[in-house]
Image (cartoon, rainbow, N blue to C red; front, side):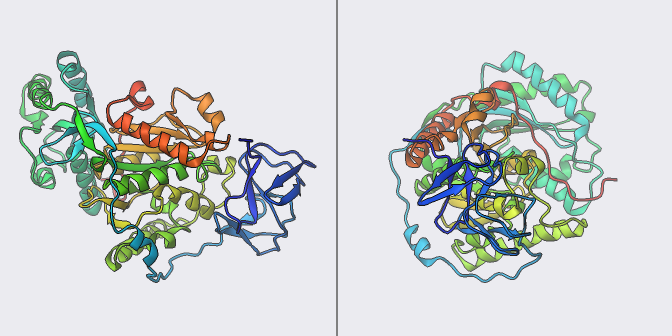
Length: 500
C-alpha cells in the first residue's frame, strides 16, 4: 500500500497532519483535495485544508481543537503561531448517555485468548512473579536497595526478580497528602505481580507501621512481611532472612494458562507527537476494547489530558453515578490547578509542540484514543483497584513517572506506554513502549517494544492491532520488555501538600 503523505482523520476535519515534511510550493493530494503548500510544514504538523476565518474553529478528530488567531489560508501551517485553545474553566456537564453504545457493549465476547501467568490465591493474576521491597519512608531507601542487592545474590534464582522501589515520601507530610501516599504505597504492596513483599520501615516516621498497616486491609502474612530498621541490631541480616522466607513462598507459584480476562492493563502516553493519537493511541484503544470484550480490565489516567475530550468519556458512563464521579474527577483536577494559581490549560509541553500538537484539545483528543470505545465502568481514586471488569478512569496527573506509579498501585499487571518522542522509563510492572512513528522506532530500538508507525507506512489498522494484542499476551507470558532488560523500574508518589 502506498505511503500517505498527509492524514485527514475524519471528513469533518479542516486540517490534515503531514506524514512527512512538506516544502513550500509542493502540491499534495488529500482525499479529493489537491492542496498547494504555502509554507514549510514540519513532519507531524498540521496543514489547513480550507480557509479558516479569524476566530474560526479548527477541527481535528472530528472535534474542535482550538480557534484561529488570524485568518488561516489553504495550505498554511496551522500551529501555535496562528491558533489558540478554545477551552474555558470549570464547566457544567449534562449526562447524555450513548444508549446505543452501551447496548452494543452489554455482553462480553470471550475468545480463546490466553497468556501464561501466575494465579494468585485471591484469584487475580500476575504477569511477573517478583519480590518487592517497599519503603514506608525515604530515609531507608538505601537500606532497601542494599537488601535487594543481597537478596538477588542469594535468592535471585527463585523468582522473576527482586526489586526495591524507593521514593522520598512518608514523613513530614500532613493530612490528605500523607493519606494519599499511604494509599499509593498500599496499592503497590497489593499489586499481583509481587509474589512477596517486604515493607521496610525506619520506625520514627509519620508513616510508621502502626498507621500504615491498616491501609493494607486483609493482607496475607505469608506474602507480606515487615521490618522496622530501628528495632533490630543488623537490619541487613534481619531483612535478608525475611526475603529468604518471601522468595521461598513466591517460588511456589508457576506460570499456567489463564484467560485474557485476568489482564489488568494500564494505558499511558508520554512525549506525544501529532501521530500518537492517529497510530499508537488508536491501536491501544483497540487493544483496550479487545481486553474489555474478553472480560478484562483496562485503566486510563492522565486527567489533565482529558480536558477538552471529557464529554465523550462522560457520555460513555455506564450509570449516572459513574458520570457524576467523572465530572467530580475532572473538575477536581481543575480546582487543583487553580488552587495553586496555575492556568488550567497550560499544556501541551514543549516536546509535544515540537512534535506538532498545538493545544490541549489537540493533545487530549489524541490521548483519549487509548480508551477505545468501551463504556466507562468506574472511576478510581489514588491507590484504588478496580472492583469489576471494564474500562476505568483513574485520577491523577499526566506526569509519566507519577501516572505509571498510580496505574501500578491500582492493580495494573501490564502498562502500554505510547510515545512519539521516546522515553526509557519503566514502572514496577512490564511497561511496553509503543512508538507512534517509524523513525523513532528505528532510532531507539533499545527503548521501544512495538512500532505503531507501520500504520503510516501502509499497514492495515486491524492487522496492526492484532499484532499488538498478540505481543501483549507474549509480554504477559514473560517476554521481557525493553524497560525490564535495561533495569528501568521506578516509582514517583504524587504530592500535593505541605512538607514540614
